[in-house]
Image 1 (cartoon, rainbow, N blue to C red):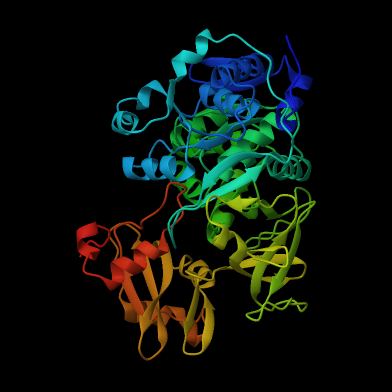
Image 2: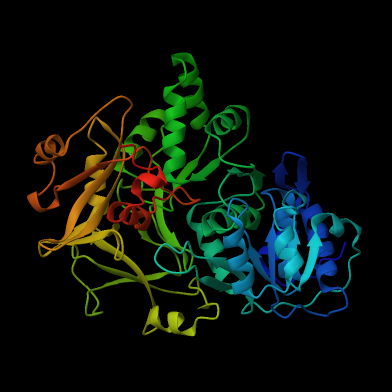
Length: 511
């Protein structure tokens, strides 16, 4: 086989050719087979060209081996990989395809009908996954590490989704620092059930596993029963999920018999590491999961533009409610409203990040790119405090910091307290505009089954747990909280529901 590749994460595979790289419902695949198949994809994409020269290649593929070989194939051909989300509606898919200026669209057979209308009215090259089977390998271009390699789209909760462009160097640094910090080894085995249009699934799980020569088992979706069965049966050594995943795993454990619970808990003990991210992990859930699994869940902090920046340690104290320390090669500082660096601990400030992990640009949005940096530091928009060398996230400036009665209040802090209330199953705290207070602290909660709770009862209970100005002055009972594909509560949607007449129509509020 030919071995001339020039992309660091793919070059790594040459050291693990006989290892199993990917497992899916159709079988298992070695690194050698993955590399050969990726080269076939790259050769087909190039056709008569020498280099795709950063052409955008959008692809809608189920989370399986084909996804990985196509991602690698795009990189090997010199293209920019633009992964699409299978669960997104047609309008959102078309937005990404149009905004990215995709030159090529790769479609899994399961999605041909869904994208038929887009394909018919666009004028770009369309390739089915089946077409790659008949490709022969041809010479591939050398890809410099500073070239653009991937474009992921932000969730668009505060504005239209932006295309976040990362170079191969960004991808390499983001991956390698996690491999080193979390102790990845070629003997590791991880279940992948996260969305693969998002940093969490792509970098933290897939790229980290493949950099290490480990095995990644691709699951079609998150299903707590399947996860528990896989842990009981197989060789898993790591797991990475979002808080909603852990909450559903807890519910599944609670619904099992006492004997089955013991088996499930013992299965968890075979794993060496469990990680949570993409949203704040409530301290109550941290403690519950620890009691069930024996694992102190490692919480970390990152975002699409930077990969991961902060993490609790692999060895040492994993402090519940905190996101830990700066990762290797990542610089962190906090700044105040005047954009001045904060030196003192326990003083809230915006997180700013600098390092080779930070993305290159927002696609076709030079103004947003320029505004997101200050003197070379990326402005995350997230507020945190430093306490005894560990960072604690207070929330996002636009949705999690409530300005009420002259105070700046962390919605996340209030949520962590409310989740200890025996009648509350889920909650989200938002600030609703108010002429007297500026914003009114509003608790939106999902109650435990067959329970009721009044604002007066909640306020009375809160007096023993919260400062007076943090106690909610408005309570709304939801049947379910609106969430995005990563399981993160979409607070702008909640605020819209509470401030417009669409609340009942949306079906989130049952009364």
